[in-house]
Length: 127
Image (cartoon, rainbow, N blue to C red; front, side):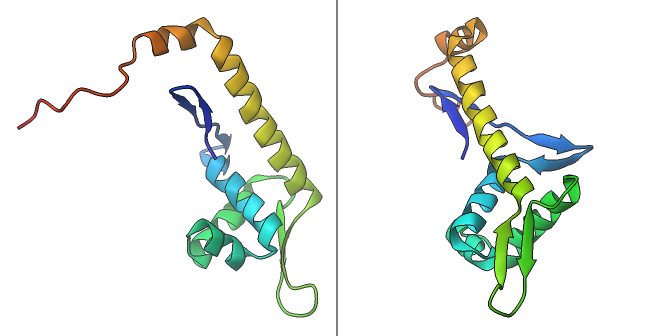
């Protein structure tokens, strides 16, 4: 989910060196894992392949000091679950998105952007 402040769309991204540790897409993956209890279920819910969803989980787990997701194959406890760290990081990320949106609405720079923005773009001048 991208935070939207009127016509401005904010995309918060947390980096670990040059790697995206958390962003709106990865936050959506964590939420889907929390809801569906598996990486494959999260992928299906988000319209992405298991391989892509797993790659995002792997990337997140490599970026943070402790894993955000644990996965267990087979048995009664099989599936994927957010770790305590995953729950905390997801909550902090979503809270920061909301705070940035609220601050943006009161910022004079926001008003300057919006005041000069067309409601719809002009048609392309290229033939």
